[in-house]
Image (cartoon, rainbow, N blue to C red):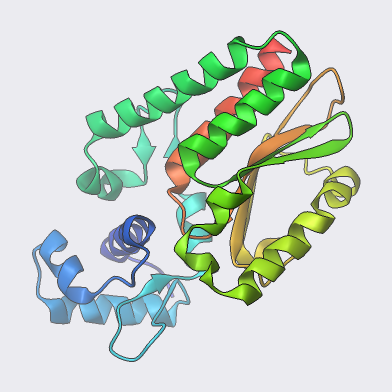
Length: 253
């Protein structure tokens, strides 16, 4: 089944709305955004659900994105350096005006640069970049330094609403316990690597996304920096920040 432009825009809006509110998105909210009837939106949502891109967690509730929905969205994101094209087609811009998106992203990029440039040692620069990512995204930050995995922001991660469930916290802990040896053995080769939900090679049931950037450092040609957080992410912004962190560290170090 092929997705139409309007269905694509509705999917994008559901993802962006859910990222902000952490609550299922209803047809009334979408109808106001698209200036159509709730019945029209419900019909489009039913088609998106049939494609496996969104799901209805409870009867009479709104919809939430699935892992497949997030993957479709991430694959169609176009994030250019400096935030000029910040999001997916016009739908994201309709939700968040371009100037505001540019300013927010640029402030984050500047904060990263200030934190890294203030350090004189390579290990301190990498830690500074990780700590900045934690502050900017609210996720857990991570990086490989001299064969070890540096983690920061676990408390920030577990304050997010998804982790009120002990089962999910345990699944995340399992993923983290095995992440360093997996990174060393698998050595993901792309400059930016994104593993969404069940795509994670370990902790498949943790319902988190791992977004990591590969970079060369004095410690290794295969160093990594990134974040781990719930699948409910502002992917455009987080991907841009992680990508920039990796590129900046490689250039500086």
